[in-house]
Length: 117
Image (cartoon, rainbow, N blue to C red; front, side, top):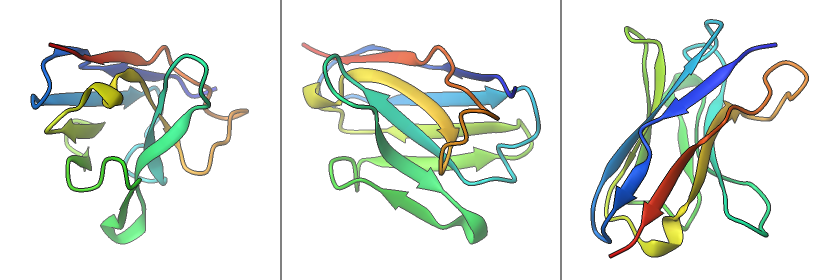
């Protein structure tokens, strides 16, 4: 099974920025449709950003204009640049395929993002 590893989370003040990165044990990040998901306690995991063929990118309304998803093919990473962070962005963030294929690529450990003053 493909292993996904997220990093880059942390504590940031409202209005601040963070950059998340994801690596994979197989070369899927530059080939397949990928996304960033997030989950808060008591809520279902939600897809907030995805990147597809021809560099098509999609965002949830809650992050549109503030988050940017990208691939770094040289470094073999999937990234999420998060700007103008809000307390409601606080969550554990995960990368994975879009659509999910959990039998092929399971969830990683995620990276915690906390937005608080």
